[in-house]
Image 1: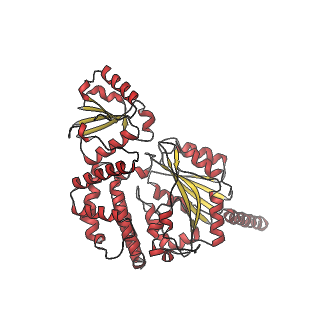
Image 2: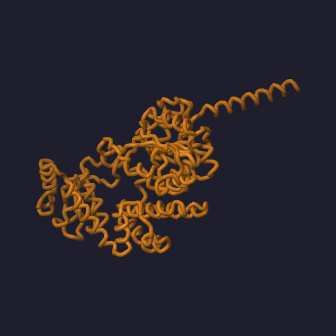
Image 3: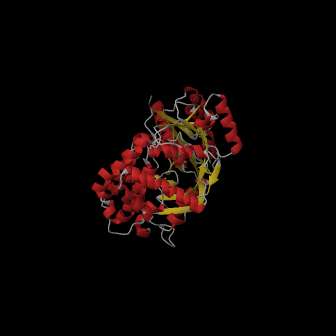
Length: 469
């Protein structure tokens, strides 16, 4: 009996030893929240499973997906023993990241988005940089991938780079120019490698917001890190215009952006660090609020944000009264003051005029809705869900010019995968509209659509084509 017990103890010790060795082998734990990303998930996972750095674990947390995402994850889990799949009811990305972090065994942590994809040497080079310089946080570069155009947009880092210290490859937040942690990097997690021991020591987790949850986690770690380094390689292709992404559903929980700002400031004050980062934070808070406000496409969310800035944020923090030099573009400060001084309708009109002037001045591609062609307060159908129709639609939602506006396209099933508001042209049969604007640039296509509309019984005087002066 004693012999059996001795053998059992030895086996347990060996197993424990194997576990320790296995943990030591894991250099990076990748934490990947997944929610309804069946269109992009394979591309993402392929770019991770085929990394040149092999000693990794890929912790996928399915956040209650209702499409085939979980099935795809299970297939990859069965093929590659480095892939581990966890599941939870839908609680959003922040909670999923925290859940994945609890199971992480790697020396470093990397929080990625499941609709992005990555250069195959990303992990190896980030790991080498972190190890060589013994970094708490390693930052890399990224490009933006335009999902609708299926093309990569190169990202310019000259402005954020100006806040990093000159001739210093290892630095802390206080070493940056103006302690500009909020200007040197955007508060998302997927371009940063974190030392696990450092994260655990700080004790921070992601808030359980539906959106804007990255900022608190990232900026507080940036504020507390002693050793930060930057790789200038572009490793991440970050997908834009994926309209299924949680970052595109912020209108449903519009308060989250403001909650993030409040949490960051309160924690900086609690840690007695606010005095150091005050100039950087105030500049960021002004820029972020204007960006956040103008990115709201649903009128109710836009109005709510506008009022919240005036009634809650400015009275609480007096950002417009800051006596120092703002680090953000002064245009943001002027817009912020305009919000405080103006009615929402005046602010929206100013926004549209500015956009029109920029387009005319720079010759940039862009379209301002032809207000002179459409009576205010009418029920409008926009035919064409390309770039023009989408821009018109978003402008009309903001300014509340029409009593009702709907976006249709013959290829609505194709467009709907990237833009959820597109409807079938069959709604035209109901006759619930005053005008149809054909928001298509190509004249022959305009003509074809117009002929089809006439054949369905739509009266000629109710059809307006883009470009008619």
